[in-house]
Length: 245
Image 1 (cartoon, helix red, strand yellow):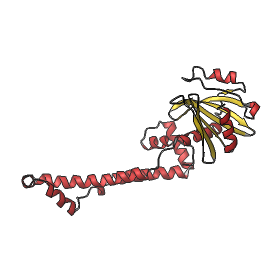
Image 2 (cartoon, rainbow, N blue to C red):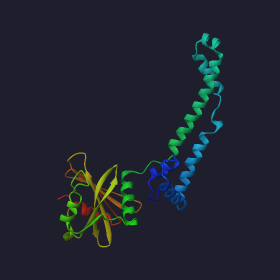
Image 3 (cartoon, rainbow, N blue to C red):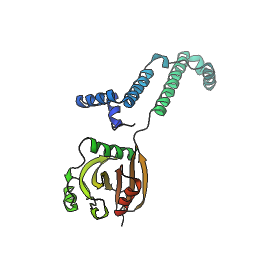
């Protein structure tokens, strides 16, 4: 998807699980986003198709004949009503299974963790929620996170290297609360997402580009880092290197 609306909101909207205000928000988005609107309509069409009576078919003759061979002869003679039920239920189950498989394979996958990070980066600039604490002093930003997270993020200022600290905020990505450190590079804004890693090891710097935004990932000192910006990859990697002395 090219928009920033979370997929789980579309799914909850289709299932009727959203409140009144959220429903209006999603419907307003659908009115302006042809991609999401088309996707929602496709899901509705599939659901309507799955409710149609034409899904229930008698099993093909060759399938019925093969199944008859597997049944004991005495059973086929004594319970003819059961035979008809097998073919009817078998045909319906077969058709339903085919539709379900088609629905699963046609339905696009949810956003990847990296896409979720990029969407968060974009929202922070669109919704005027870039910083909860505004300060260039790491000794002001770091204590601000105390009591708000179950970890203490490593806050550093790299102004001497051309990456001044601007502030920080809380966010929620990859199914947990994270710290976000905001840096500047000329006119570019860099969001650095930080949360505890699964182990205390380090990892090499990885890079990728999603919807025009560069994402640099690394692990150091028991923390996971994701830096996101429209800054070029080379300079974004340089910032990551500053976290890895």
